[in-house]
Image (cartoon, rainbow, N blue to C red):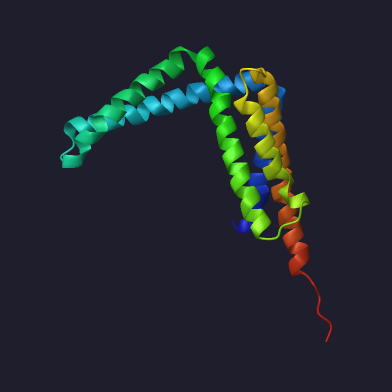
Length: 172
């Protein structure tokens, strides 16, 4: 599959996940917490087993972090309600940092203001998510869904614009 088709698929997936976020944001957050907890527990168990049975001298250094990861995973699974309240804060930080870095990169590359809509929206929504103690999770989830839909549309339109740019006919 070429890059153009992958971009279309990725854009469509972002739009689909954005719609799912908009339709039921709290359920999506709870699913993310549950999946994250299971993944952290799995990686931690592997890390503990590697630390105990590993023959590498450096494997024992992973024991402490693996035990902490196991505790974190158990807390995430057993106490989804409080974990769901923490996720928008971390998500807000990530959205703001990724939006800011993309905006800086695109401004140095000389991109137009319309192509910088998605990164600027990410920065704004990152600030909104970061202030989640004030704003309910459902509203933060809806805003995240909007960002995902805008990002998906932006990816798809950028692929179409690249086709237009490269199909310029030159008269001889």
